[in-house]
Length: 400
Length: 85
Image 1: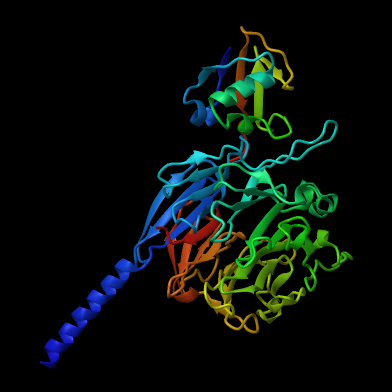
Image 2: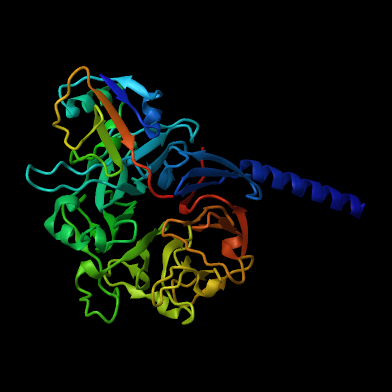
């Protein structure tokens, strides 16, 4: 009798697991690369992945993002090496694509003046849940754009693109990252659509509370490169690599910067360097920053070598994520399953993401074209796709 | 007039040769864009500059300015320079 009860219990439990799996939202991973984009569809348990792609083979795709408001619309920021930049849009989860009727473009300069032209759209950010069809885009050279029709047409947004002060902080093409200065980390406060944060590489972090009419610089507490006499009060010398806002606490921001890892708890305007608690042999330099979907004390980074000539590879050839579970007081290394030596990864600022499942998984894309999944909040890593082109960006989503 | 299209732009025209009209190169590109929405911005930037890796030839001579006059019998060739890996 006991055996029968046990068997029945096991069968019921398996049925429940199966029903739970069927009802669980499916996870997709959106992978943007130097030569196209792929959509990885996971099964309910995220054990197996089906690759849908390439989309736009041969195009540089900087970012591929699903509209969380309808769970079907995808926007892709793309260009080829030889043609101008554009934004592609799909309303059926990538089955068909249509080009934006008016992609992000700077205003035409007055006669006799030299105007700027968008080289590529780098960052795409949807507006708030209630602001249907509102999107923002950050470009290289640095510009901020907005679409009110779901990404079909784009217009310059806010004063930034033509403001002399911002233009000075942006510098020239020579002042930015190797493939051009970038406006990124466009973050919309879910409580107030007029409250936005942006990151500029270089040019610092900024916020507006009036829908882009005016901006306030947010660089207090951030370090600048030492030894050159750079004034930390000047935005020009600041390079935020990636800024994130906690989903369940919009007053808390984290930042991976060229000069360390930081946390900012509003209304304070002073960043705290929480990367000081990282192991000295690893340091606190890197590109991506990923936050837990529900716990504002939990954040992950993927450090890189920022010494001497800045190889931008995993320190010592040993890739690892680091997690803090107490808002930056302490950090733990997460490398189970990752290569133990001779793995010289570069992970770009958009190439790390977390899903929102009950047991959160991390996803890291490297420039060698491998996509790794860190199950159980990064405790167990495995490679879920390889031989892709250089990965530029990784996003997760739960489509409808 | 006859316009030859590079392979990178076939997603717009679906053929390597098409017809467009205009008294200047600028007018011809406007006509092309009306026929194939979005194609002009891939060739010409928002400051009306021919993009870095694009070359346009009129009757075998490289055009450097959108104000270049055109005649109905001219042949326009749009070329994408090949570079990079």
